Amino acid sequence: MFEAKFVSLGSYFRREEEGMGEMDFDDVVRRRRSIRRYRREPVPEDVVWRLLHNAHRAPTAGNKQPQEFVVVRDEGLKRRLAVAANDQSFVAEAPLVVVVCADAGRSAARYGRRGYEFYSVIDASCVCMILLLSVANEGLGACFVGAFDDAQVSRVLGLPEGVRPIGIFPIGYPAEEPVKRPHIPLEKVVHMDGW
Ligand SMILES: Cc1cc2nc3c(=O)[nH]c(=O)nc-3n(C[C@H](O)[C@H](O)[C@H](O)COP(=O)(O)O)c2cc1C
Image (tube, rainbow, N blue to C red):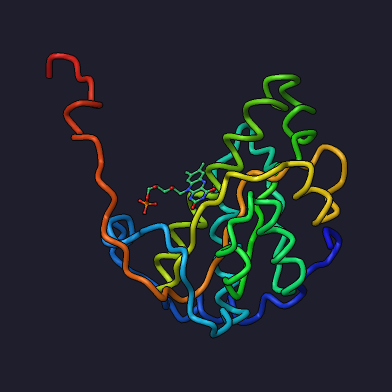
């Protein structure tokens, strides 16, 4: 599974040349929700590529880019991922699941233990956030699923040694409109000096 590669980038670049897809950034941030119910229609391949292309642009420590993307559409694999994610069945109900992984060795090559344990995870998390915002920008829905058994996910996907799953993202057109989850008031978490 891990070796499987997409080969067609054509439609992604066509869209970029046409200048399509711009949307107000604040709206995208405000509108994003964790979506756990999906319509059945598939996510078109050019859209999948835009999501991946954006996520791949994330900043990474030393530009080491430890991210790896595993794109899953096979029903059997999705079901096994759902089981590995503590039986969160909605994972298998999305037409598309992207698993963001970190090849910690790429970060460790430059930064040693801190790269392996810390930067690789932070880097992959930056990738995850861009993926989520890009999903919202496309009118799609996704949920960051972080509750899973690492070893089980690695086995299901055939991840090589040193490649660690960071987030499982079921993605599809939303079949629910959740209300915004409450946030701690900003003034309680912002600590400013005297300006
Ligand atoms: C690191 C991380 C792990 C998460 N793991 C799960 C998960 O395993 N299952 C799930 O349903 N939601 C999971 N979530 C989604 C959160 O529950 C959700 O983001 C939070 O409740 C805020 O809601 P919102 O995303 O709609 O703003 C996770 C989110 C993050 C950032």
